[in-house]
Length: 137
Image (tube, rainbow, N blue to C red; front, top):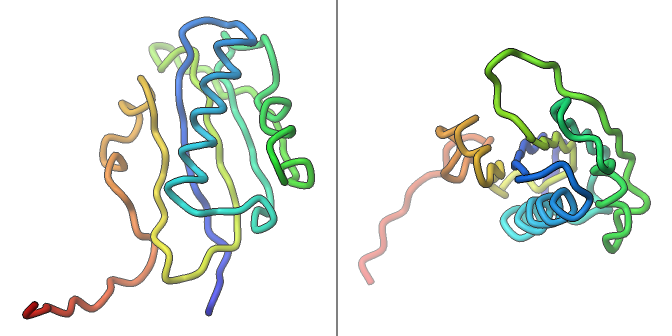
């Protein structure tokens, strides 16, 4: 099986700047990342979390670190550049991981963050198009 380093994007929003709201949103986001991409922490090179300036209750990496296997993943929290009128209370991630080349990438956009990339609301394969074989069954 051939593997290559790939990037996975994702984002979500929270209703309030609280530890509980952020913990729920980050957990939901990472659960969906793992479920839809079958990516394992040992295959991750690094994770960068960004938050909008209105979120400062907890670091997203502090939420991710206790997850099984995530304690060995290099993680960084940064503040997202503020642009007037941009989506508020938003948490984003950029993950670099080794993934089999035959595996499609699913970028995860939840809650109000779906507005950021409506074109990525469907699975995205970051690979060469697969040959289609029709079955007569």
